[in-house]
Length: 291
Length: 172
View 1: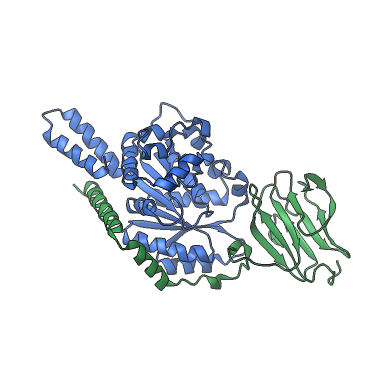
View 2 (view 1 turned 180 degrees about the horizontal axis):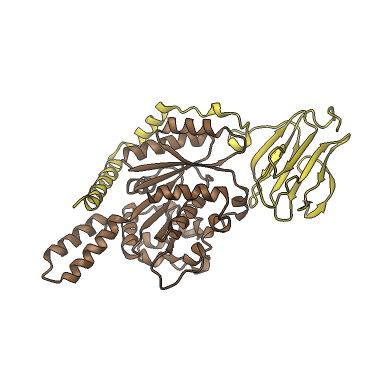
């Protein structure tokens, strides 16, 4: 059931209810959860921009601020964010792919990765919590998606169910690079879009198309993040050019970072290097995400 | 000081930082008519690598009489073929690592051939001139993607969701 259908159903239930005040309250509480949760999409025109690492680190900062956060890996064709959260493949019984093909519920594909993302957290504490919904790394499953596609509407239903059932404050969507139906859906339903780009000419032109589409989809807020900026580059000029071209704010310019290259996506940078300038810059982006 | 007209300096040399997993270049420094290249963490070196495994002054590459030489001076050491070296000749293609777990660099000698897919990391960092946006092209491409029922449907969905959300978050 989609968000709108679900909200409509609960509205009917509240009206038709015969005196069961507790049920009405439950309904309204859940409805309120969906309306208050924020959906954040991270997107880049090309692969290799550091999109997944950015998503993971932002999600961790937001969770550490005392929130319940979900991260969905919709990069089904080239999944990878599970590695950053150190979610072993052997632990993954169900992935997003299984949900999309009706083999399980979306909650079955959600894994609590709070320990890996935040460190030891009181298991009885409701916040912070971090959940990851990975995509399958099995070649056959990836091939199936490429060959058969999937119902994108079901993806939207899944997002809303996650927010409701996991009582999320934030849902991060790590999208597939490029523009396709799933990407556009993710952008369309997001409260904020974080566009990650590298300072090269292909990204510059390609990201402009994505930004234009996001604007037409009336995305409430678009944040530009320029990643992997090489040393000695004139960052002031670069920022001016990007902001002028896209008509959007550059919230961070992150340098080409050797520590993150060495981590090779197998860990959370902001946890490993809490005082690093890059961590501080990512925290500023996270502040904007939470604002 | 070294011979400024060393035979190996004329065509220039490149030092490439390699991806720690896949080994492809992720940043290139190009030097022509330079007989000494310093590498370290401190600002002011020819190659500055802000990495805790790199010493403040880690190594120097020198165009000696017959070949380029690597002189290691950092406390983390420099490795070629997983062996610590204090000094070693550099032929084109030699890969060396700064510290046992530090970044890996490749030394290349001779003229550089740029490929069409090279990114900003691998070309002249002053080339900001390439960041000229063809706005007409962007609009045209966006038009092509946005035409059709799917985009309209998505727009309506997002408008519906936001209007409900605003209604609930708005003043009572």
